[in-house]
Length: 235
Image (cartoon, rainbow, N blue to C red; front, side, top):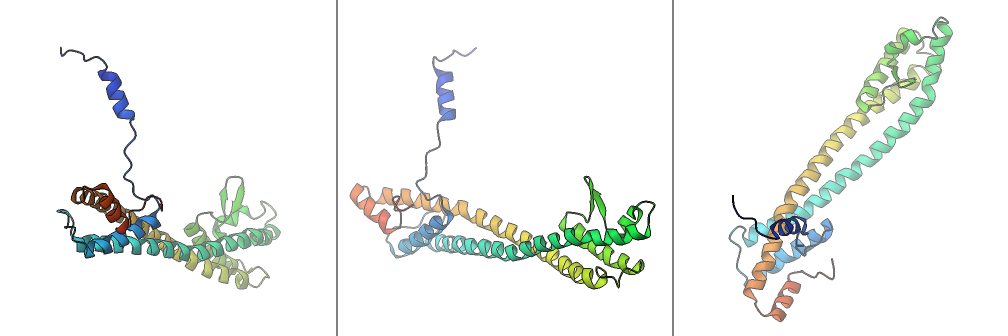
């Protein structure tokens, strides 16, 4: 049995709980992108040599790509908002006027209020309520069934018949499709941005170490770091 070293357990526990050393880089994505672009530009013009794992040109490309990815992700997200708002507005319109369709069925079917025909009209039971499905894609499909059933049951000429529901069904189907595609695009854009962030941070951290190694004088270090954009008081 190997001897027990006094205090080893405490030292191990302390080591395990010791907070990770901060890298001194900005946490904000915008500030990180700004620093990356500034550092890449200064490094290109500097006598400071390239790093073994990344050249000056490659780092410049990384910084530029990361900065561009922030704009792409924001633009896709902004594009989804108006469509989402319109879908919510249509949801309210649907909830408000579906009762009229239920009313048509109730008038013609006293025995059960027309509930036996709800499925044909795309109406399902969710919880305690009968309504069109909550999920966007399912609701879009249900609206198509609703329009078809209105004609089949000769409700198409009524006030809340085909002329009322067809435009809603058409718009809802397109918005649901576009919204799904935008969510996918936004997810891809965010994923790309996150994938680019790690190597940029690695390059910047290594660049700081390189500056310190090549400029041992602390005053010279501070000057070069500031020239490269490393200003902790700013971020």
